[in-house]
Image 1: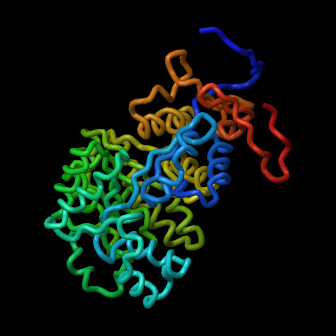
Image 2 (image 1 turned 90 degrees about the vertical axis):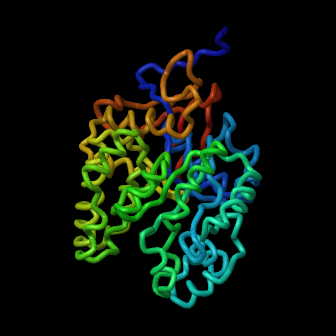
Image 3 (image 1 turned 45 degrees about the vertical axis):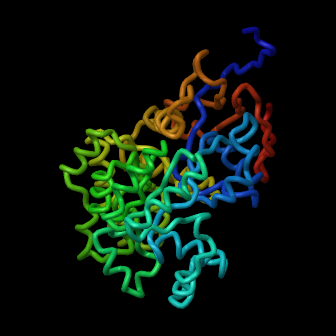
Length: 384
């Protein structure tokens, strides 16, 4: 192969591009250019969208997964129960342009099905599974997201008006659903809230976890926190399978930023769970659970570094090797090599000595094409 140009990168440091394994954007054309440029500016070339509108994905055909754009895998709608999460969330957003702040709004959203089949699917019994599978086979997306929210108590939550929007699938439908997803060639990611949810999802054979139990512990009372703690035995089983775990620790910090007591509870539960899983051999990934926030991406990396006492080299492996390869397991990415894709970031300083250098990006090459991005407001233009 003959080189067609020579670019001087003297004094700079080359690293593979970064990834984010838990996002909800892009999701359609609205604001797409800004979302794309936000990811590329942060050096995030690879994005995993865990719950999006099917119509949004279809609208983005030709605008993602191209050399000059971000590479994205989509799950389409999450699988949940009627009146569960995110059924009520997305109906409320469609009806009120808010997540449903009042009980009356949540009740109205639970009765609406305008987004059913697009950004969520309902599965309340095994009898409904064949029809759901037929619907899902319309598309060939590689992922499925399943929702567990205190799964052992789904029946009680279904009659609790205060729990509208705060429930998910029952344990009875979980394994058949996961088996059906695998038969379709889809990897399954589980939203979990409690340690029992985690165990049920592990039993069902999911491929990864979109959260670690306890990420929302700020909302629980001290008397209920025990149900969020993973046992050594369950963690050992997760490690033996080398399952993927996206702790979303940055989200935990954001939730509890203004409540020091809640923050201590969250740190106690979530961090302990993540450390236990890491020691057991689970594969930890970075994922911000963001809709389009550069700050959320940075916060998740920083939270993981603090919680797991990661060195700058560990952080770089997490962002530039482990997470990209988990999202795109069949692609030659995550390395600087003639056998891998011609994509890299150029940094001003050594990212192995100083983790802050990982954000000091001067140039971006994606699949052999130099990217040119508008400078941030008030920032000097970047050379290309």
